[in-house]
Amino acid sequence: MADNAHRAIALHLDRNPVLASETGWNLVAAYLAKHHAASLDHIDAAAAPSIRIQQLLKACSTQAEAAEALAEALDHATGDPEISMSLRQAADWLTARTLLSDNELGELSTLVANIPGRQAVTVAQACLPALSADLPQHCTGAWPTALHLLRRNMLPSGLPPLLAFLEYLAAATEPQRSALQSWADRLATHWGVTEELRTCRLSAANFQLPQPTPARIMFVLLPDGLQKDYYTLRMWHREGVQATPALRDEDTQAVSHHELARTVAQHLRQWMRETKDTTTDNLSIEFWLPLPLVNEPIWEWCKDVMDPARKVLIRSLDRLQLTTIQSAWRARWESLMESTPQTSDHAAASQPVPGSHTEPESTPPPVRDPVILDSPPSDGQGRRQFLAALRSGAPAILWHRRDCSPAFHTAALQLIDAGPLHELPDRISALRAEAHPSTSSDDVVNDITLLWDDPHQTLPTLQTLVAPGEVRTR
Image (tube, rainbow, N blue to C red; front, top):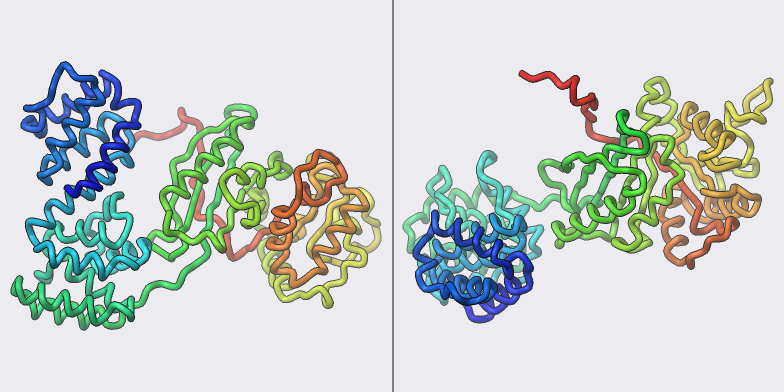
């Protein structure tokens, strides 16, 4: 293991409180006693636990098998797989040195140095068989991925996975194509797999990286049904490059109302850590909420983790239950997307929507989108207006969280008329990012709220939630 890598890993382990305790050491030692007892031979039993961990790291730093055993032991003791990622990368590097010369490894490292990690992972997924094992968590970039693939078993074609990875990488990266293929040619000749490499090169010739797609995070909060003021939180997310699966579903958990903001922020931080190479320039964060939560300040839940200019959207869970309004919803959405401030008349935008308490009994007012509420949906009048708007298929609904005053209506109309309607969420996000904190009820900036329901960007199929006693065992 290189000295700088060893120092970085040693410092990381030294900062972990579990590994500084006798309990932590006992867990590590017990695991190694079963899987790699030789690494414990020269440990000073009288030293402090943190010193013993450092001695153990030194004993395991020259052999891949020992480094891997220590990584597994650390995972077992701490329950934190991130703490051993660098050690696993070091184990791959130790193995690579037995398969390639230092010159070959140095050349390869230079060739892949500037390739984004997310691109490398996408390429690796493309060149491996569909049912092969996923890349492990420590493959965070092109170089760790290349070292890991060097250790994988041969592909069905007889080609080493590393060479297939380089061929697909060369096809996707024009500047390094010639150099990557030349390096692969030399190694294929040395390993006697020239024909297999040529076949792979022909297959990879038409490979193209998928186009970047907007990163999307969806928090779904379902009423618990068993406990008052509790919600079942589900989270789907899609990173900035289209991958398989396109949306990943995280574990569900029951969250109390007062813990919602903290739990959401925790999930966002974890997503940011795990998707370091994902662009957040066009990130949207969607909150799929039942009626009791639509007036929550969801952007406040995200502000300590994400840039306030990020698009934070409210979506309606109740709308999904209204199966009869699907065609009207889509039609009104298409009209909204095609509208411009000049063609969308909002002179009477604050007129009541169908079903509100002031609606004339004769003829309903003309449909205008976005709908602007006369009061927040947390009170009786606002709730009736909100539900009436949903039932009529309104895709966009604006209100103020505390007071839909005339000043708010004026500000809402100005926002609507300031540009294309499909950019309205961006304008609201930008306005909120520039605003200063305020507790005034007439603060139309911080508390302006938009429900923005795109019928083409909906939820994956939600499984019906049932009480524990109703679950069948098979």
